[in-house]
Length: 215
Image 1 (cartoon, rainbow, N blue to C red):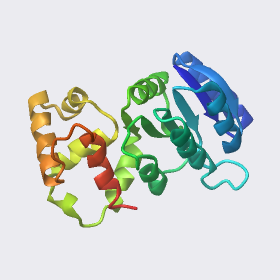
Image 2: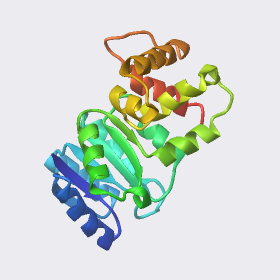
Image 3: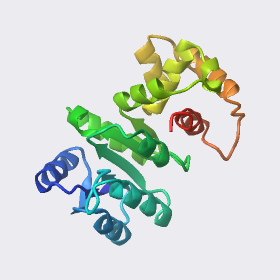
Image 4: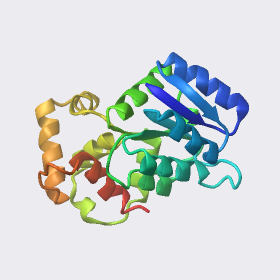
């Protein structure tokens, strides 16, 4: 898969280029700010843009804004955010279009090549990948809402869905059958009033419904 990378730290950027290459990605451009990232994406039309949130000149949300602009100009482009911090509002905004193909991982918690490889593969396939720490903090901040009707097991399933896990992977993590996972997910969709639809990705919409309550 073709990747463009934006990271303002030169040393970290070079390290990420090597890591992404080892993960099987073809890094067609690596840049140091959001403006350069947009230009690189328009030129190379990558499968995925890997970005930091805080970049020059203001070190606030330049990377995220660039990623959103890229998805606007080049629909279908995946985005993987690698951040030093858990930014709940950024995670929510990244998922706001409901299209999938996005991920949010914490740099300090990416300890194995397999994590990057798995994340890139899932994002390229249109999945959603969230670091478990991001999921935990978002759950911790969630106020009383319709989501409060979910059982503890359903909340656990929704958290694993937010990490981008498949039904099989959720079952493995919870030590239950795929059929039991399907039953929990069906119940979640029912409680969140997400009926079957040919146009909407209900897994993404379920995660969005949850994130909308914590931002």
